[in-house]
Image 1 (spheres, helix red, strand yellow):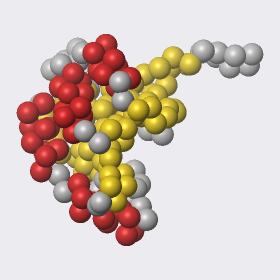
Image 2 (image 1 turned 180 degrees about the vertical axis):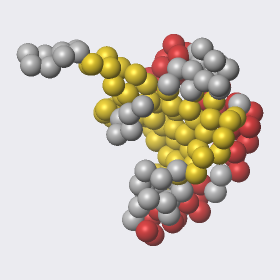
Image 3 (image 1 turned 90 degrees about the horizontal axis):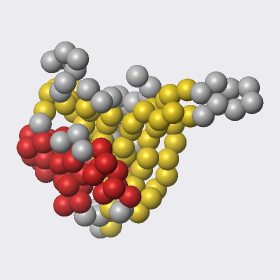
Image 4 (image 1 turned 135 degrees about the vertical axis):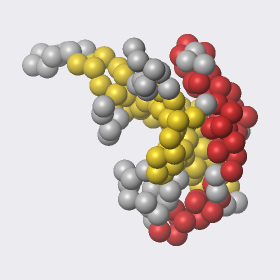
Length: 152
């Protein structure tokens, strides 16, 4: 492992951007990330997404060492909104009759309206406490899971 891969980065996806387009924000740590989260124009971005009929604004933290991501998107409208939290992590898919076993990036999604819960999730993510993170995620409302559209 090199120092280059033992770091966290983050990016923003703004409502007016194309679906898979992001604005890279560079290297980060927990404190900086939470500051950026709190300063992010969530409600303005939610209004834009609803007006444009586009994807919601999203902030994603990437752990380059473990090749995992934790992201948050906002959903709803200015008067009633919540957050979708996604955890992207490698998952082994068992082989079948004509398929080999393979490892893929898998996303599991949950919802909450409570930003203090989101901050706790990111604290665990930045500590690389995978067990604690997955246990806290399971306390939230399950939203869905699927193979990630973006594979490394």
